[in-house]
Image (cartoon, rainbow, N blue to C red; front, top):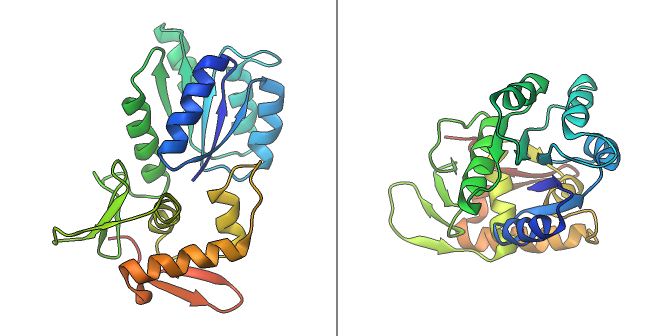
Length: 224
């Protein structure tokens, strides 16, 4: 999953970038509201983490303009401001969730997971599941529903499987997967996606990931 982090406090941004990378997210970082307004609307992000007190253009104005332009990506607001009025204004502007600083990294992690599931119609799932598989996002492993044996995943396999499970039943091209699994600074190679798909197939079964010639891949079964 590819995230945009908009935060002008460099030490906090560095900490969040490291935490989110460990959680398997590809993250682009911006510190200016004007840059965020353009990039958030032009790049294929799965979720945006937005600070309100930004140089260039305030975060609340950025969010308002995103929503006015039709951007539907989930937005989680981070702010040190704690008044009810500002929380309400953020939600009115189109924020999906609100987290006040300081916060525990695990709370941010769980809120991101919930927002991503909700965005894909899986809000009622306490754990991401699709096509008979349960994914442990904290430990980055997977097991069959009703069975206890866990399948260990590499970080690349985990990122790919999480994306497949959030989009179960959909046909995903290699270029689409590359856009959502790598940040804007990483060179994208569709052949690498094919390698990771084959590794996943060996671990969870070849039948789970269908190849659609000329189209891409489909994680079978749809969400359950």
